[in-house]
Image (cartoon, rainbow, N blue to C red; front, side, top):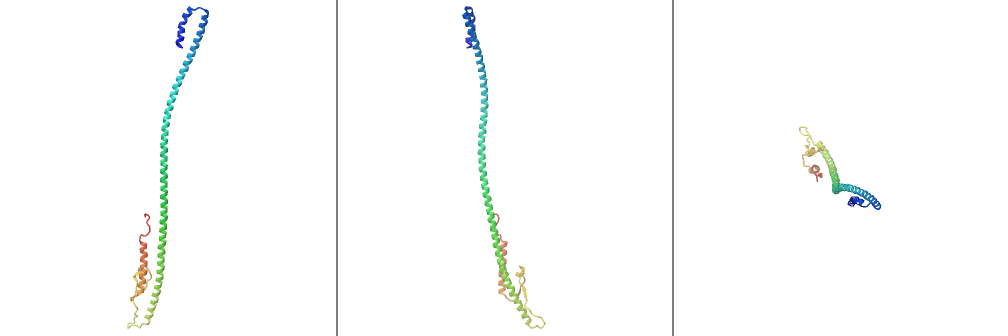
Length: 227
């Protein structure tokens, strides 16, 4: 279009010289107006093209920035997925540890309860056994004292009826204390020099029961915390 307008401009003087007709003047006027119109349209189109080029360049820059942001967003999403997977793994691990800890705690509580019950039952059984032994020994000891008292009264009665010796002294049966009874703090029971198998057997039974009880108490029969 620009080439056509230049060609018309260059050819116009020649045609003006050769054509002096009024019709030609009118035609020239029309052509000039057409040329001006076309030049205005061309200028307008050129401006639009420049504006479109600027807009295209701006759009390209915006697209580049958006692509960079999109790449960053994809990286953030990938990192988010990794973190979510780590959080889920940690949550499962925490639940496993929590369940294991609860099981261990419940097991320890049950073990402590069983141990306490066992110790309690053991203590009750031992106390009952000691109490039963003590009651039996007390009955036997009271019976023994009663018999000894009867024997001592009989000996005193015999001593009163015995004649005096030439020196005026009274002969009484010599008595000694039971070393076993003295050693455990029981009241001293007099013993004659003569054999008394019933008393000895009773004392032996009493001391055997006491010794067995002491051994039961001294031995480590209580359940230790480590087992």
